[in-house]
Image 1 (cartoon, rainbow, N blue to C red):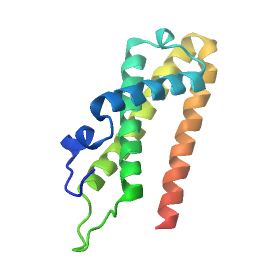
Image 2 (tube, one colour):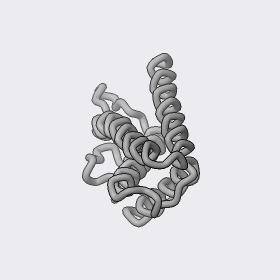
Image 3 (cartoon, helix red, strand yellow):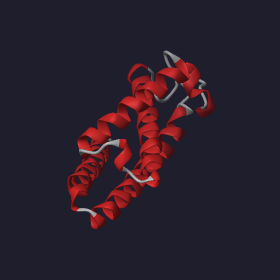
Length: 140
């Protein structure tokens, strides 16, 4: 990604472009489903949609993380990279999507006890996300 990349240009500046991002989103969805012990067809339509959005958001965050690992987030003039604003927005979005996905699975678990493991996996994901943010805050 180049220095002046704006959010709408993100897929064009990723190796492999949008196809690579879509492929990684699919891999992320599968990994999340495996962690929850579910299959895609076991989720409600709301669960499938939320899972897809959450996986896409996670992949965008990972893409930005990879870019930040090789580029300075602040330029010589003291200006933050434009992608940092997107990163903050995506972090907030991922938290909200995880919460929504957890509530969908929680609703499913109330109806059928087989989804308890999935709910626990999502709760662990939330704890890991929160712990990561707290560790980042402490490092600053």
